[in-house]
Image (tube, rainbow, N blue to C red; front, top):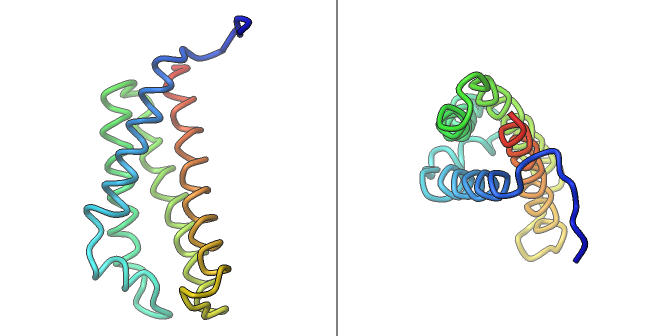
Length: 131
């Protein structure tokens, strides 16, 4: 395979992608409580559970940024905002469509949500690896 010049160190980028994948697994599946998962989907009184959940994402990103490039601590705020927008958007679409888990479109919605989170993480990994 021919050599490819990159703007970011590939090894650092790969480790950061792994760190963000672990962070996402922890925030979305290991540390997210039923109160967060159910609360952020409600038509009302959703803000506190949603922010508690997306705060986990922001905290994870803060820990990664502080370990790699402390000056980029603000990525945690960006992560919080982006995850809040993605998760609220998914909740609104789910409320309007009321798709059951047996409908393929329900899983498309889940997949799009997860895809957007991973694309966000790739962008953060590039920024940190290039710093």
